[in-house]
Every structure is written in C-alpha cells, then in structure tokens.
Image (cartoon, rainbow, N blue to C red; front, top):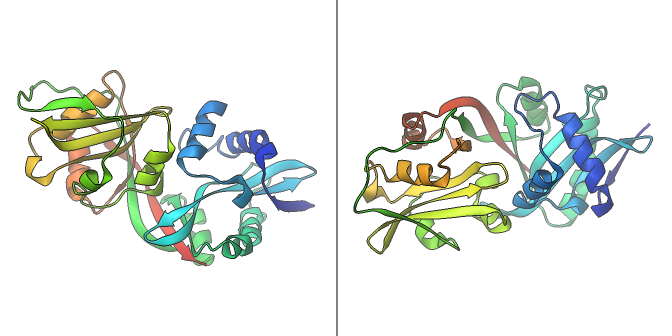
Length: 279
C-alpha cells in the first residue's frame, strides 16, 4: 500500500536516487551527480519539510520537491521537481501526493503554487489543468552545440567580474522577468556562480549570470540604449569561452530576446508551460 509523508534531511539520499530513477527516461537529460543535485535544490529554494514523498514498503517511489518564496508579491510554493518512478505511473500517485501536501502548504501561509511542465507532455499538462492550474507563460529552452565566438572587438566596452549583483540597476535593463529558477532570489541562493558586467567607461550597461554546476545562463540583459552593438554577445562569450551555455525558460513573448539567442546560434529545443494555482 502506498503511503505519503513529508520529508526531512534524512531523506536526501533516497530523494536523490528517486529523482534519478524518475527522470531516467525524461525528454531532457536530468542525470547529475549528488553534488549537482544539492546545488540544484539550493538554487530552487527547496525545503524538504514542505516537500513530500510517496512510499511503497519503505521505498520512495514518487516525490514533490517544493521551494518556498515570494513570487509576484505572494507567498508561493514552487515545484522544483515532481517525479514517479517507472512501474508506478498511471496509478494516481502524483495526484494523491499533491492532495496530501496542499493542506500543509496552506497552513504555513502559501497562497499559490507555481510549476513548469513540458508543453509536449500533454498528459501532464491535462493533469495540472484538472488540478486547477492555469497557464501564465510559455517558456522556451535553447541549446547550442558550440560556444559563442565574437570576432569584432568593442574598444569602448570592457567586461569585468562582479562580486555581487546590483539588482536596482540590473532590473532596469529587463524587458520581462525571469522564471523561478533564474530569478534574482535564485541567483542570491547559489554559491557557484559567475557574474560579469559590461562597462562603457565606468558605467555598467549590461550583465550576465551563469550557474556554474550546470552551465545554465540564469540572466543576461543590456541597457536599452546600448543594444545591437554586440555587447550581449560579448558577455555570452566571456561567460563561457570554451563550451556552450544552457539557456532555459525564456519568455516566448520576448521576441527580441529570442532573436538574440538565435543570432548567436542557439536553437529552441523545447517549450514549457509555466502554470500557477491559487491555493
């Protein structure tokens, strides 16, 4: 008989092993080392005490990993990963586990639940709609087979390492807002990161942030009056000179941003629905 309970620190290794098994046949390669997994859940703000597992005879067979934080001004739980291992799918485990955890989330003041799901995973999208989720955005995932190379030099622009982000300045460069995994709070949570700024003289006119354990580009933006000068491409090249970066969850409505990555030889490999449910 399947049982459900909230997790604790002692469940970390079983959760990691269940994660690998649940995503072993996923459309995207989700295999990672224990250290990379630990960095991932730190980035996403995962709280094990607000995450839940499904168990069969003591073996974890499914899970919801939940982050907690503010999103669009509301106390939010973020689904940092939901999985059920092969052999237990189709039996309602994910649905029952979600029903189990929602009362606890409400009790601690969570008012909404945020997630992303592959757009082509129609079965999962349909399940979330039945659970009361509504789409908020479509997010594009890009990949490239080669690092960005820039031939033309920008004599009036220099690239410098930054120790800490200046969010007031950086957010003034934005046309939209990042997904949870790439948010300002996520950048603050991670330890292994690289932040580079582009400077015209002493003025910062652009920046980029990379999450080092996975090579994910978390953020990149250039001041509007300095765009189309090659500054963004220069930042990309400097962030990862020897290998291609991974670019996840770009708002499909940001047409200029999509065109920028395509111009730098990135291609859209899949899309995700960002969905939210009011609790």
